[in-house]
Image 1 (cartoon, rainbow, N blue to C red):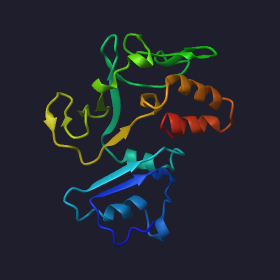
Image 2: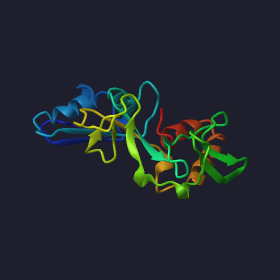
Image 3: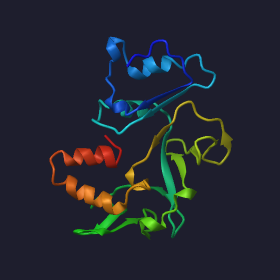
Image 4: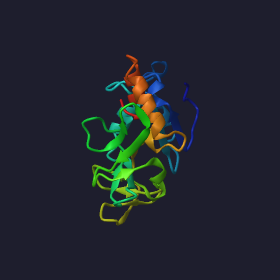
Length: 200
């Protein structure tokens, strides 16, 4: 809570969306916290969180302040075209799909050529983070490249967005079960969007 008398090189805001917007009536937690890294040669301000309510969410605000919104693109194991994973819905011609009442049948439908991708086939080791706005990309967050492939200096600010479909700790089957459960609960959809999709 109290950021006074702490000079550091790195400030990490874990679960920023849960921070009070005004710390002890002194102002924004990120502005106060970032004051602590002003004297650092290599300052880093890292903000991570599960998002909450659209329009009043601090992680959403922080993400929108960056010129570079990065999503993790993976090549389709069948056609090789890159795409970032999307949940999809009944109207989407791509994304997670399953037979009615059979979450175990889930697969991912490639947005480029309609290839059927099973979770076990997806190789994330060949993925890369791509900015939709600028085309800038990186594989490791250390070296950055322009859309043409020229190495460029690291940007001052970056937003990385990722959601549960990429996690090695859950399955697409579980995501479908969570979705179906969310539809039964008045607050379930909000929880699913925030915690599974990582969106407000």
